[in-house]
Image (cartoon, rainbow, N blue to C red):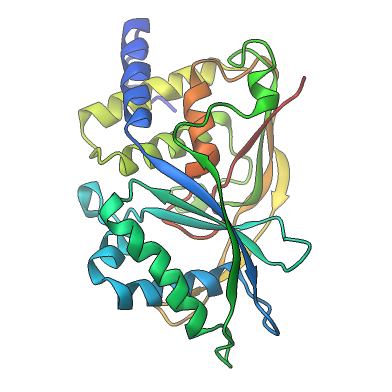
Length: 290
């Protein structure tokens, strides 16, 4: 939201900010892989798989671990270059996950996949039961366009659509969870995420993009948030204990489409809004309503 002491951005300011944001989006390279697993006798959770892959990556290539798993972005903030999220289970074997690799140099790709093979041998659960990657399928990349139902809806920028957050969304303001996030809140988090991944620090350029996209979001008609509280528990390797995180799941409907926010929302389907790589945090789906 704009403060009372901030002049609203002009149309020229907003046009320039939209172009700059588009350049940042174009500069982020990502690819998404669906991995179908066999985990006999073990109920494999996403944090469990994330943890064993991280340990394996550290053993295989410390440099790859530091750059991909830990990450260090602008302003010395952690910006890991991956997301691991649950995928619809494979009816033959279950479970399945999506692995999103973001701006990972080609020189580090071999370490990524070698680490998964090592992780299979390291095993899961207290018994360290080995598991297997039955299938690895590329499902999306930077070069992909809009999803078919959205692309075929006439003008996607003005086509009614629904934003859905199927896993807990955790947006905070002054230490308090936003239980009814608005489009401006989602846009602010999305721009922050994109700028971090693009290596942009929180300087005047960042502030200009945030101010203008917030103003654009305020002009887009959106339904009130429809959702509920949805908390999750995750293991903190740093604190060596389980943490309960509070979030919300739900939907926003844009009856007149996303307008100039179309490129941002399309990319956030894969990059998420959430901080770091807490699984599922800020995962966004966009569906056409036509």
